[in-house]
Image (tube, rainbow, N blue to C red; front, side):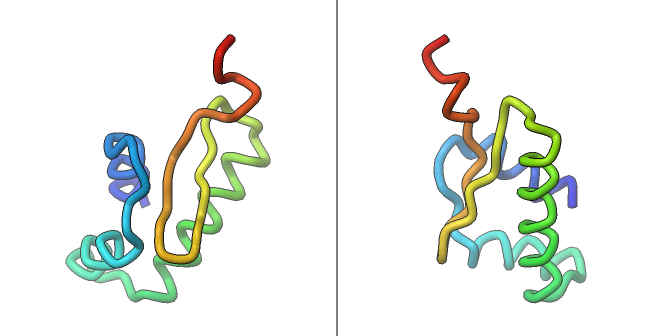
Length: 72
């Protein structure tokens, strides 16, 4: 879901899962579906080995620079 990706990118800090759920519900997406979308998107970033990664914590989600590229 592009809007979730945009929110994570622009936030610059961990985003509460509850806030992402609120956004998703406004767009007609269910809680379980959103969690699947987030996990799939995180997996996609990892599979492509992009410069960014999505970290999924219990109550928060964050988009960060991949550790090996920090400080280059």
